Length: 78
Image (cartoon, rainbow, N blue to C red; front, side, top):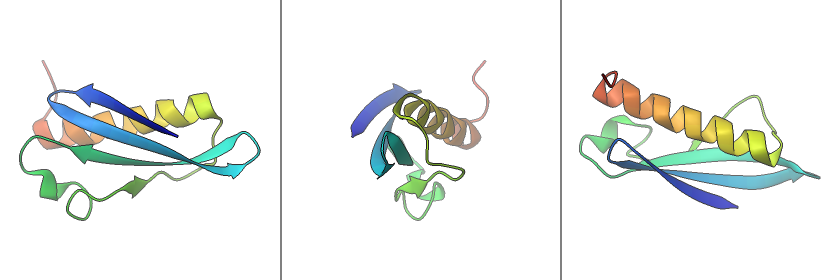
């Protein structure tokens, strides 16, 4: 399962992988913008810990993790 969310000029690509019945592992990747190489290994997919999650929670934690990574890169939006 796959979803792309736009945030502050970047795209957060969230992918879910079935881990058990109705439970998913989550990875995300940041695309777009400049200085992308500082996020993960050259912008590679980043797995989230403490899963698996239900589908709804998986997308939520993937989006929040991606937004936090972008906020670290750009600084806090005012």
